[in-house]
Image 1: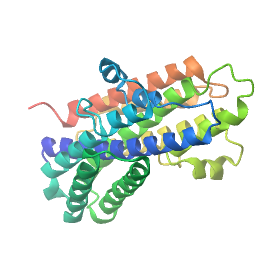
Image 2 (image 1 turned 120 degrees about the horizontal axis):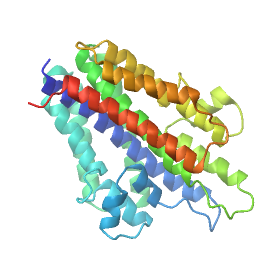
Image 3 (image 1 turned 180 degrees about the vertical axis):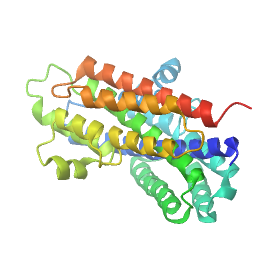
Image 4 (image 1 turned 135 degrees about the vertical axis):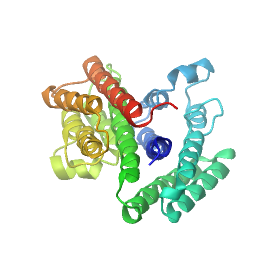
Length: 310
């Protein structure tokens, strides 16, 4: 398989995962603001930071209200990481490699792009926005399910999975960094009830609430949520699960890359050795920064080994 096609499939995996994660983030944040009591709000600006677009958002001198942030994240032409642009990139990368895929996958991706482009071009009411994003999440999962059930499990599929798991691990660390760093203001007398609501929103942002309750079976609290989302080796969106999946996929590729495997090993060691009890605020932010740097190193090692510049 040509390195160009491998790179297209890798980026399709990343962009499709990114679109699903962004849609879920927006819906969960809207529900969180409804669940919190009057006078207390999680705000919308944290979503801009989670997606890594804070500098671009501030450069436009916008207010960080719901309407401005949602428009910026969904369809703003000035935001190359918007949902609209992400769907376009997912489709374009798949189009370039569609001969390697089941025809149904291309049809589903093309249909998702067309529907998304139509919906995001106009103004979405809150109700329509919620329904559209919910359907988009299901459409992304349908594409992933069709790939699993209908595509040959060869190296072409491996590169899609590598992109998906790298993106997923990165998003988990970003959500934990932002939501764990400034979860709630310090001047509230009794934080416990509100912290539980916010940590539940972190889990729901990763579709992890029900699985957390199944594995942990305790009241939702920060230390247990961190342990579940960072170390659990059975939940598909935990960082450790993603790392072990990446390790197995990279080991099976031709021209195995020691640099990528070393970065993954460092990540696993960091996760296993870090004390998570009571971790929040700046120490949690530093840990997430370290994990994101190692994930970026893994991406760079994959790029240099299998997608060399022509």
